[in-house]
Length: 390
Figure 1 (spheres, one colour):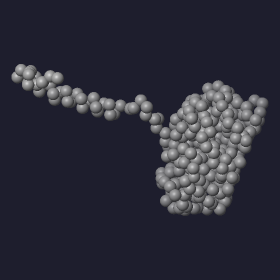
Figure 2 (figure 1 turned 120 degrees about the vertical axis):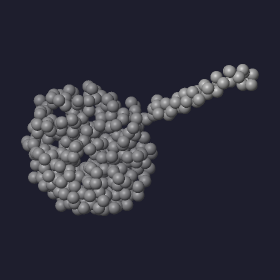
Figure 3 (figure 1 turned 30 degrees about the vertical axis):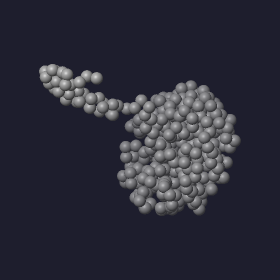
């Protein structure tokens, strides 16, 4: 080991002058290491907090699922599950036709709490925001539930059943009712901030972008409504009854109708850009579309999943199941995940529609998959909630 006392005075002076520079270099390297991302850091996953996973309703997950899926757990509600689940911070929120909303641990499906309403929960999917779970029931009641405890906080009564899912935007909840209104309710106490009158039931969940809510209507009209005050910005005739919710991407909205068509609507010109209809099989579209990689993917009551070019509406591919497809597809990475009333969950290649995998639940899957934190969760009409992962 070298000893500083053996060095000459000039050598010791040179070393003392270099020490501050060496220290600075060391601290700089430490700082760079601290701010560089870890090669094993997980991709940020915001969860799946509402129907279709995000306010623009594209059904696009933030991160991919494992290439090979396995059933991790199943939870039996005992009554039909028609709605999508929400997944937030390791907790799954699901509702059933038995009037129950349950919070389950995503890891193992164990029950955290159960909230019991007086009426069935149908297609309305839970939305989670600000420490609350919001959902509508078939008696027309909007429920606000404490997300941590399952205690009810407030309810609001509309004048008819609710099948639309709530969307939380700032201090308000947007939700449609079969009483022909789109409501904006206060997240604090459920009081009405405004309500917009349509000309038919509001089955559609509102897609939200740039301060505007878009609904595709049972009154055959696609509408844009200002979120600030509930005033209509514009409307576009769709030409058919619409049960699906619109998906937004860029300056386009996409949705299927009961006139056996899928529409691409130009929000800038406020006109229908294209209409797609299968050349042989004419059946309604109840499924809400997913949008990813320039493609629109939607299930049909013709038993098929259709993939269309988002720009032109031209068919890219179709995949045939054994029964109608009311389940709304979800996309994660390069794969499409969708249920069918044939009782199967399908995994398809996004590019060519080839089947990658399927799971046979045994009961119709009309609910839509929710994808977050490396897991997929979906329910069936026998009341079983399934969770898949790697």
